[in-house]
Every structure is written in C-alpha cells, then in structure tokens.
Image (cartoon, rainbow, N blue to C red; front, side, top):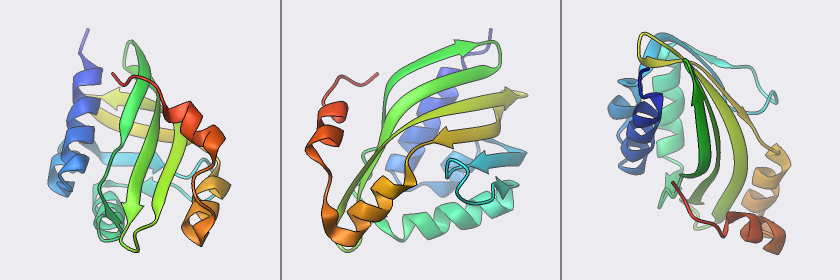
Length: 142
C-alpha cells in the first residue's frame, strides 16, 4: 500500500515554508479542493490551486498547520487537525478541522475539508480564539 500519509506530511512541510510549488507537486493536475466546508465553490485544477495558495500565502504568517490524527484505507486518508496561523495584521487564527483526501497515481486528487467558517470570520474580526477552541488544540500532534 502506498504511504499517502507521507505525501500529506510533505504538503504540510511545504506549506510551513510557504513553498507553493512544493504543495502543488503533491497534487493531481485535475485536483479538486473543497476547502471551505461547502461555503464556497471548490477550487478546481492545479492552476486554480496555485492562484489560491499564492493569495493565501500573502495573507498569513507563522503557519502552524498540524495534524492530531489520521487514518489511511487504500487511496483515502482521513485527517483531523488545526489550521493555525497569524494574519499579516497580527491576528491569530486557529480553525479545528477534519478532512478527507482521495489519492490517484500517488498524489492528491480530491481534497475535502470540513470546519466551521464562522470561527475564522469571528477570529479575523478580532474576537480572538475562544478558550474552548484552545482546549481542543492542546493535544499531541502526529
């Protein structure tokens, strides 16, 4: 069985370095990324993904994306983690999430993430990260 977790960890390591091309190397040419839990339309294709990542890269600093748990069955990976970073305005954002990755030919073909977008909106509006979200994030990473 292919170790898709290793590919996911390369994505995370690349993103920690703001290395968009490193992330894209782990994605299928026809990747579909549902990165908003259904709030917005999916990002479709590697070029659209490049544009989205470049835009995100320009708005965040101190990327602390991490995983708490994952499981792999065949070409599917389930993950639980937190997307945590500081905005370029100095606002801390911490969004707990779960995601599902489907792999094809050793790279990520379909990426679906599920989270409460209101948390991000509230945090970016200056309401801060709540103590109960911080409590969810106070656990070992993998």
